[in-house]
Amino acid sequence: MALNSKTISSKTIIRKIFRDLKPKNDNWIDDAIEWVGEALEHIGSASQLIQKQCVLTVANHKVLLPTDLYYINQVAINNSVSPTTSKELDTLITKVGDLKTQIKSAQDDGLEYSTTASVLHEINSRIVVLENVYFKEDSSMQPLQYGASTFHRSMHCEGCVNENAQYEDTYIIDDGYIKTSFVSGNICLSYQAFPLDDNCYPLVPDDISFREAMFWYVYKKILLGNPQFKNNGIDYNFADQKWKYYCTQARNAANFPDIDKYESFMNQWVRLIPNINRHDLLFEQMNTRENLNRS
Image (cartoon, rainbow, N blue to C red):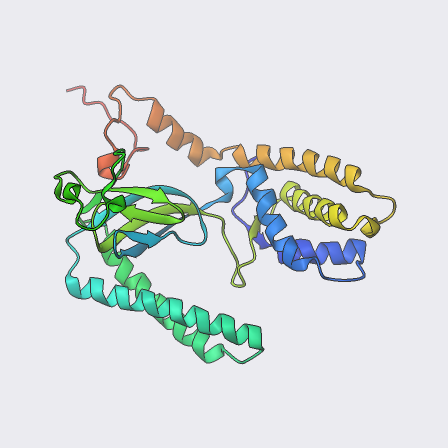
């Protein structure tokens, strides 16, 4: 059976542990958030992920990858966007980073930060508007090729004679950064990410197999570090067996396509004319039905 599109916060899993096991302390909660993320990765289904896109500002050949990135779909550039729009977007992205730092500091110190959070919300809303300029359908986005050169331009020392070599713009991934062959500019990034709630807790598919899998994975990790946490004789081995059982169930449920996905898959593969070289078109209309002209 295919998954529905509903999700719940992993805080629900933590509440279930408190309700069912009645632990005497809560010193494991911060770790539990990370463990839920680990469990989702172990299940490893792409249907758990959400499609995201953003505009990143490259400076000195590089830009940090988004913190919620799981894997990259594609990287592109859009040279048709006006310099004014690009400059405003760059400024706002920098400001967002500063505001997030202020909020984190206020949270750590137990201070009020609602005003800062309100400003952050307004700026993020404006960023969405500006990013839509990059991603609108009639834009001239061009995909970047992944760099195959062993002398990628982003790795050159200053003044290197190879810096002026003529070739198309490319990118590579290195040490948490996207590194580009060009020095500066904005790039459009399409990527997959694990969904998070407003408090950055992982969101879990609202499916009994997923809920049980998360519960038993977190429980077995608690038992691994605190054997005395054992409840009603349930030890680590029992919890591990339960996790493996529900992990398989959750993976099967997540990988089972719904009717629309079946139709999309069929349209991509059952074709008389192969859909090749779609990378340059950002894979648009890959899943449209092929119509034959019999006239």
